[in-house]
Every structure is written in structure tokens, then in C-alpha cells.
Length: 93
Ligand code: SF4
Image (cartoon, rainbow, N blue to C red; front, side, top):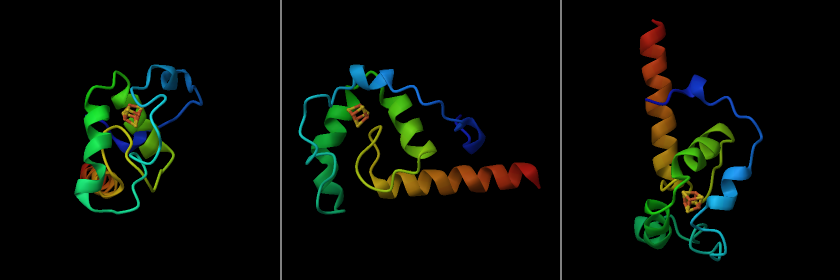
């Protein structure tokens, strides 16, 4: 399971070459609305993406506040970070 301390990021962006969203317009990945339905099209593409795990790790490591990354929208990533932080605090106490 991924932890916050795993999020040491090395600036290797080669994974982007294999991204399923390469060549797809960014509107789907950065919808104007935060409604869950606005991110459905992007999430379908992410579900088929061979680099979704590293994409999500990149978004978490660089604290991307907007858009769909690794199949998760911004709210889902915030909740994931919170769960990871809480788990690490519990483990440390
Ligand atoms: S997981 Fe989604 S946003 Fe990330 S590279 Fe793949 S298609 Fe693009």
C-alpha cells in the first residue's frame, strides 16, 4: 500500500509517453465543474491507461490540486492523502 513517505519523486517524466491521454484534449481532464459526472470521460480513459499508478503517484507527490490524474479527481486525491496521513500518524503513535 502506498504511503506518503513513498512519494519521494524523481523528475523522470518518461512515463508520460505511454499515457492513454496523450493527444486527448485537456478539457476532459480539467472539467469546469467539480461534479463527479464531469470527470467520467477522463476516468474511462485512465482506466485503460498503462501508467495510471505512476500518474497518480506523481499527482500526489506534486500536490496537483486540479484535474483527473491516475483515475482520481481532486476530491478523491484529497481524501486519499488524508487517509494516508491519518494512517501514518496512527502508525507513528
Ligand atoms: S492515468 Fe489518466 S491522466 Fe494519468 S496519464 Fe493515464 S490517462 Fe492520463
